[in-house]
Image (cartoon, rainbow, N blue to C red; front, top):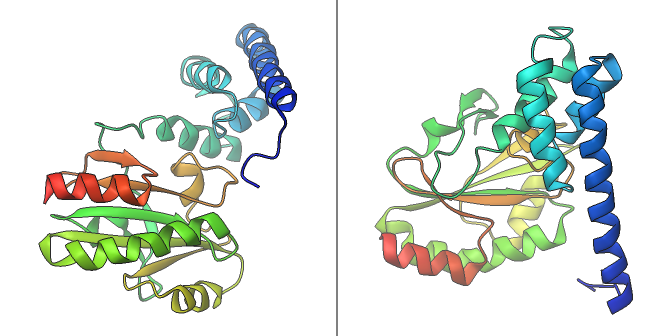
Length: 227
């Protein structure tokens, strides 16, 4: 079930989340005054996760102001900087650009694949049931608006080749799908999705974010207004 908690369980989970958020914010104050490798490691994890929103905001501030030049070149910096960039992913702000594995297997900039159109970037995986149900619900909307300037680009996060193609064929996706194989281009981190199955961003012709992970009915409403 989507919600397996009882009323007491939901309350307890919410209280636990608030306590953990407070706990990590307090830790961040110590990391600020005592720069250390463990602090950098915790920051790299914290900025890449949206589980604790106050922690994420504090860790990004901490990284940019106190850790960006600490142990320069360490791989943790890449993860932290991606997490900081992901905070820019808000409705009304420009969508980020990044490298992806193109249709022919070559590396290309994502923006080169959709300029001048309203586009839905569908981040999914063959093993993510909710992602696939959502994508199938988008198919009739795509067919309705594809000749009016609407485009869908799927990016599938997989560990093996072939699974994306099999899932796309089974579900009947009529749009192009790109492969993010073994996190080669760190697409999920750059989109602030960390270890989740997927998400989505609706972007207008100028690259501005119109909606984040919209349900099918919300997506169609926005397209009707835009197109």
